[in-house]
Length: 352
Image 1 (cartoon, one colour):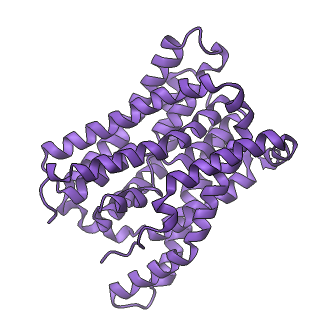
Image 2 (tube, helix red, strand yellow):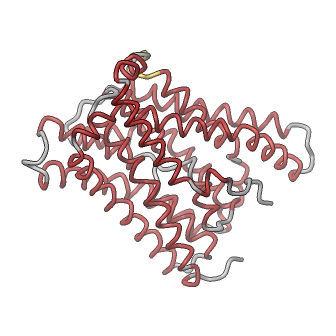
Image 3 (cartoon, rainbow, N blue to C red):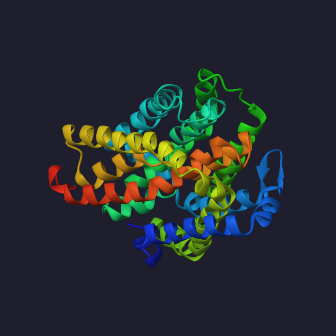
């Protein structure tokens, strides 16, 4: 049973709304710098409360939709899942770190301030180590993917991320000679992954309690997520406005820097999609699994990356700027890949 709601008006024109929010954030940050500085100061332990609340609004509805029971039968169709896991955890973080070192320590020498190079690399690493858990459902819907299989992929990714994100980021940041404040990193993982996940599990258990028919429980979850979905949309839009408001002056003053940061992000995104999509085609994965598994391996959990970057390095840091540029790049890139996947469905076996 497909328990995901249909594509909303917001999702259909997602790139437009995000673009408007980016423009609004930059404009407001330039017109009202004192206000945004005051909001940036609302923090504790390097964690900004406003950002934390907005990220919770985004993530919580998606966590309620995650059904860990769907993992029971995932072994029956392992190909798409294996492709996603290999790309997400064995390839993507390391290629992102390698691209960061290549561009910011070699190719961009003379173009950027050397003192900020490690900060930019750190931002890339945080993006590469955070596989998407929320917008995945939107991309999967747009390519007519199998919703239950997508749920299984997201559920397993969430489990792995709870245990692997902090050690993996610490490893890669250590390789690039950046000091890792473990307390802040673990606090961010707890706030933005563990707690929302636990809240989602508890909410789902309450919604399905006493319902002997699984379809009835699925319907209750779908109805609840549909009701709270506007909060998620509001959280996404407000977060984009806030983040680009914090970085608006930098974006306006240094457009070349933004373009330089975008280059490795674009190479990484299209490269990861090409690897996953080619593997799915060679392995003859059905169309409704092939496209989502490639898109899941391509997109990032930018909410977590932004939050951790802010927590580790501060709101006005180079690392935070890179993760914000990741938001700027990801939506149009993913929409272009969705269009490509829909045009090439005939490359894959029909869905079973």
